[in-house]
Image 1 (cartoon, rainbow, N blue to C red):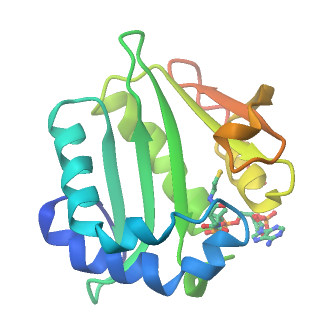
Image 2 (tube, rainbow, N blue to C red):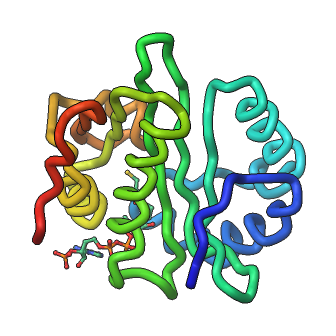
Length: 172
Ligand SMILES: CC(C)(COP(=O)(O)OP(=O)(O)OC[C@H]1O[C@@H](n2cnc3c(N)ncnc32)[C@H](O)[C@@H]1OP(=O)(O)O)[C@@H](O)C(=O)NCCC(=O)NCCS
């Protein structure tokens, strides 16, 4: 069974392999990270771990039994009011099997129980139908337009989920 693990230094090689193997796939629906991300990957990984250590973000990897990374699920920009932004990406070879939907639901539970968060927000483009479905099925609702500058220059929508309310997860 794949396991959702808190990001640590030991994950760096598997995360880099995941990002490289899926670079073109991700770039079809979200902004490419740019060459610098890959060239300076260790620095970037260490910076994330420092953010996590400082309590302003929480980063997770879904790890397969062979140690490879199937997906990344991140909570960014914690506020004093208990809000955070959610971001995620799933490997192409694992797509379309409910991995993102199931893991976002699990992360919502962890966000409240482990990180004390009250609200999660996520922005996605109008054309990213898969991501919209993931959010809707995990109980997020659209709350307004997203600044295109935030999501790769394309129009989109902010979604939000109140973690203090009843789960509100649709069964379909
Ligand atoms: C968005 C993403 C995380 C979805 O991951 P996933 O594990 O394949 O998602 P799920 O299997 O949980 O599928 C969610 C729904 O989207 C649908 N879907 C998947 N790919 C789709 C596509 N290309 N077009 C339309 N619908 C799609 C699935 O059929 C499913 O709907 P259903 O339950 O009604 O059948 C993945 O496609 C990805 O990593 N994309 C690139 C990064 C990205 O867009 N991240 C989100 C940024 S906001």
